[in-house]
Picture 1 (cartoon, rainbow, N blue to C red):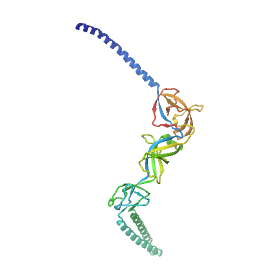
Picture 2: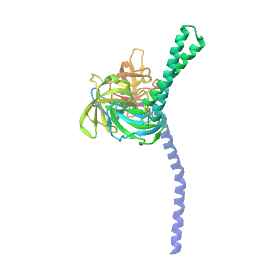
Picture 3: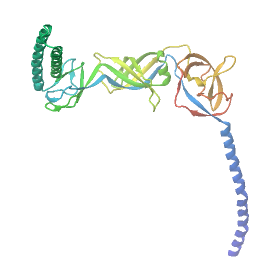
Picture 4: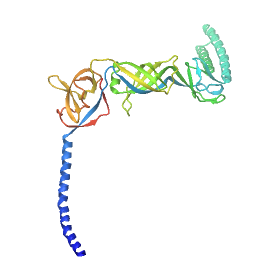
Length: 366
């Protein structure tokens, strides 16, 4: 029985081995053909630089996140050095403009002022005497000039002594709140050493970031309102104070600073904010595009290359205005394209299959 099994096994093994040897070249040839086919398809699809189109309808509301901040934050210090004889501020304390905040021990400064006053009186008398003698030609011009110079020097020293005594006190530069207290009463402080941080909340600032197309078309903003997580039922009117010229190089968004008047609103800094930007109503939708995206024909037709489902389509546009040297505002005949080719459109053609290389900047429809 064992011999019979061995016979059949040997009989079957050879054809199987032969079949394996036969099919290996066939399989390798099929894989190579498939690879060449994929490579050919990739070569057919041209690589183009394109910008993502984001629809933003005129007259609509666009929401951005922000954070509140005080109108001003200043670090206060003394202009002279010495031990603190009075300093009883607390964090969060409210002070009106001109309110007393602290004082350095004025003893030595009063002594210096008394000396300066005595020297001034002496030099003033010397000057008056020199003027009388000089008028009678009883002293030389050099002696007269010396008396005048000594008087002027004494006058300057007196003013310095008065200022130094005055600088032993600090007062609130505006009505606001104490943020931090950095020293204690009795501590010796140096000139210009920070002793307290003071906040101005007469207005509230809100910082947020907006896209490039909106930053380039500030005139399209009709109004801005701000709401806060802690006060969700209220929306505060805000005005644009500043829109930055340099973008955030991570998100490529532009900083916008808003102001909210709040004499009695009690708003504070550090609150997460929802900024609602309302655009003006319009009768058409536009796109902000780099000027390199525009193509032209001798008959005056202007168009761009749109990309939809991986293929090019010609989109006729009407130029509304020039935003700056590199960007234009256009009205497209259709807005079905997912991407707009941003440069290099001269050698492209209708229906061409393309692969998109996304540029960092986004386009906004408005």
